[in-house]
Length: 243
Image (cartoon, rainbow, N blue to C red):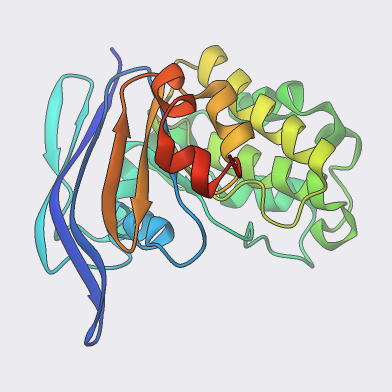
């Protein structure tokens, strides 16, 4: 059964600085939804609100997983992860001195994943063969693209139902960006995931998104109900495509 995510009227701030202002969005079961915006517009903060890392000042965040509705606001991050919601953070945040295999094993946090640890590890290596070849190497020795694959693999070790991906293109060469976006699409399709992806690279994100939102100064400025609608929006043409 596909899982979904609903964000309604979220406000969030760091001290006196408001970052998210009345943001609402939905990610239906089995969708890939892009949250588009340039740096500093609140994409990462919204991801952190969903994961319980940044508590919102007001609003609601709910996830429906296996037919059960869960209110996420007020839950600790580990409880949200235990529901089957995984975050691939901006900048990857790997453990550089630990091996590839050790980084992956640390991803198997939730109880369901621990019970299937060996199988999930083989799934990761089958999905990302380069990681299997480098399983004994420290994460710091990997290329930027390989590190992004490792971060995705670590999230996959949770056996998630909902996958949040924050700025997967950051720090990568263009060809590696394309490969990373393709890997996210493959994971979504192969494991029937629901995906919310925050990204500033419009051209790459819209290749795999079913639809998306544009966030500007902490507010949703546009909702595109299809990839075509995103491509034809004047705001996107101005800020992303230089038209």
